[in-house]
Length: 173
Image (tube, rainbow, N blue to C red; front, side):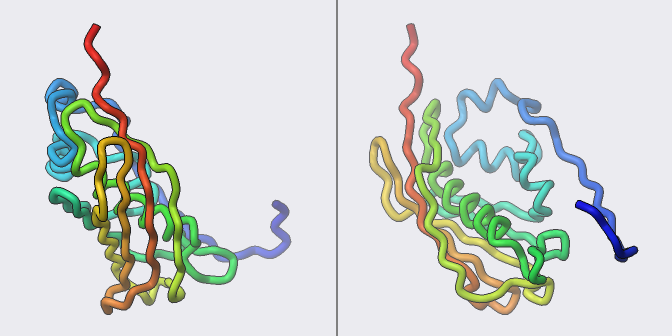
C-alpha cells in the first residue's frame, strides 16, 4: 500500500507465550475444564490469539466460558468499527471453549461451523466486551454451543452458534 498522506499513527507491541510450555505432563492427564483452569492460573500458557486480540480474562466452568476484551482502535475496520473478524473470533472462542470445558481426558475437538449475527455496531465506546459461551448439546461425536457478546452496558451486540466435532481419546497400541 502506498501512503500519500502523513497520517498520524499509533504503535502496539505485545508478547505471547510460545505454545507447548508449562506443565505438559499434567495436561495429558487433565480434562478440558482443568486445562482451561490451568490457562487462567498460569500453569499453561494462553493461546497466542489471546495476546493478539488483547483478551483480558477467561473464566470457565463445565459447559460455560466467559471471555473479556476491551474494544480498541487496533480492532477497527476501515469504517471505524470493530472488525467482524475480531467479533467472530471472540464468539468462536467462547462457544468452542464451552465445548472444550466438557472434554474428558484425552478427547479433542475442532469447530465445524460458526454462524454469526451482528446486531449492533461495536466501537471503543462499547468499552469492555464480554462474551459468554454456553453448551447447548453434547453428544459422543458432536456438540452444539452458542455465544453472546455484550458491550459494557450489557447490550447484546452479536450472537453465534457453533457445532464442534469431538474426537475420542487415541487408542493405546
